[in-house]
Image 1 (cartoon, rainbow, N blue to C red):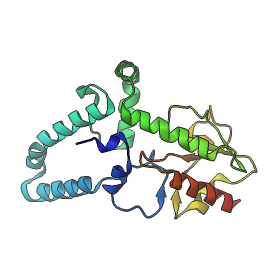
Image 2: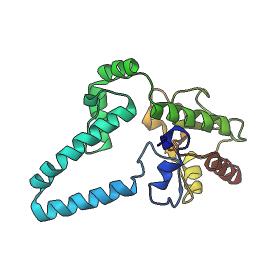
Image 3: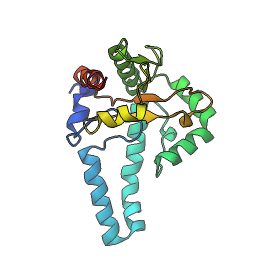
Image 4: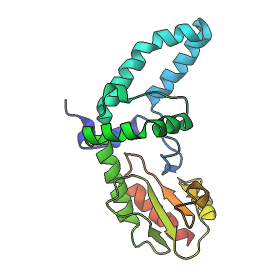
Length: 211
């Protein structure tokens, strides 16, 4: 059977609960799949009936398989994947082993996920380039799905983000996020891998309507 990821990332969206708003803030929190939500609920129930340590031992083979599958998907060695309790813990771990992680990534080469994320970022930057009142802060070919927009007409970034809600979720990034590098607030857009041209057009139209 052909790999569905090879041609169409719609399968990613189909395996998740229907989104209320358009999620363009994946850097803050991803959307769990239906299978993940079901497995999480089942594990919590198992902990309540058999005890946390027993449930952990029972789940370990599945977690080990998950780490191996994720490593293969990301194009890194099996030992290059770890499950951590929070985004902050992940950041701390990343910073602690940054040099090794970068070397391993460069040696492994880009995987289809990294390639797709770079493609999504390029498509987003191209879709938003020339949008009146806004300027894309990064080069079009930047290898990232995170896109930063500068307000060129003095728009308040916080009010813009609020104005896009509840239909579209983005991030208002203040200069406190990177005081040495940022000279002005930015509107950050970070689409998921299943982002479509229609999603990006919806964002364009919403930003135009706010102006």
